[in-house]
Every structure is written in structure tokens, then in C-alpha cells.
Image (tube, rainbow, N blue to C red; front, top):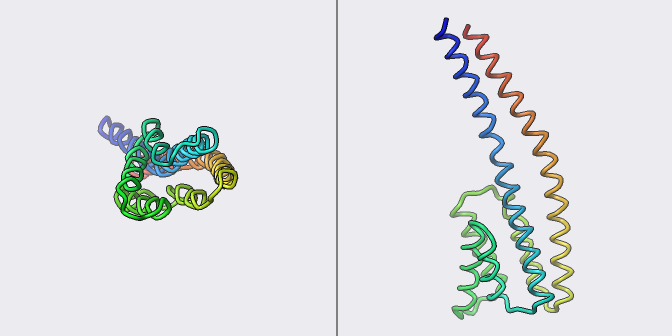
Length: 173
């Protein structure tokens, strides 16, 4: 009897653990979207108000952000400084592609990071500010939507995994 009880507890814990693992992808995407939101804010502020060069902006921003964005920005700044003749947009896109291949994150994770390239194409500060604010607004809306969806999906997944665990216990008893 005790063996069945302990086995039932292990099945229930395993089912709950599986449910928690399923929710990790949405948590990962939310983390990346929050980091990109901070990145957008600091880049826009440094361009508009401080009028710093892009390499300096990227190096300063790398100190504020967490992995993988800190190394991403340092590599972009280094490649811009090495004088290889490539412009910011091509360097930025190449680094996004390398980050995607290297880390294996979901493709949606870097969507807004790639949307920032259209902001770098703008020549004037006013146009860049508007482009950054559009991307920032889109990112904010998507972030709010994902937070709401994540709560609902997490609750559903946990409930279903708990019920699946109980069903397995009932079947095996």
C-alpha cells in the first residue's frame, strides 16, 4: 500500500514538473522581449538626448543588459570599429543570425531585435526617434498581450498536468 502511495506521489510530481517545463518557452520569450524593451529605451535616449555615436551607445548599453544581449552589443560595436566596410544594418543583421544559430532560441524571440534594423536606416534624429517609438510601441503591446496569455496558458497547463497525474494514479491503482 505504501509503495502504491509513494509511486502515486512520484507520478503526480512528474506530471507537474512536465507542466512547468512546458511553460518555460513563454517565460523565455517574455524575458527576451523585456530585455529588448530596455534596449530600445536606452538606444533611443542616447541617440536623441545625448547624441552619442552608435559604438559608444552599444558599449554602454552592454553594461546594463544581461546575457545574451551584453555580448551581442559588444560584438556589434567591435565589428563596427574594425573598419571592415560593413554598415550598422548588415552587422546588426549578421549578429542576430549568429545569435539565433548559436543559442537555438525560438525565432519569435528575436523578431523585435530584427525590427530595430529599420530604425538604424533612418538618417535624421527625428526620423530615428519616430522609428524607435513605433517599434517600442509595438513591442509594448505585444508584451502586454503575451503576459496576459501566459497567465492563462500557465494555469491551464498546470491544471491539465495535475489532472493527468491524478488520472495516471487512478489507472495504476
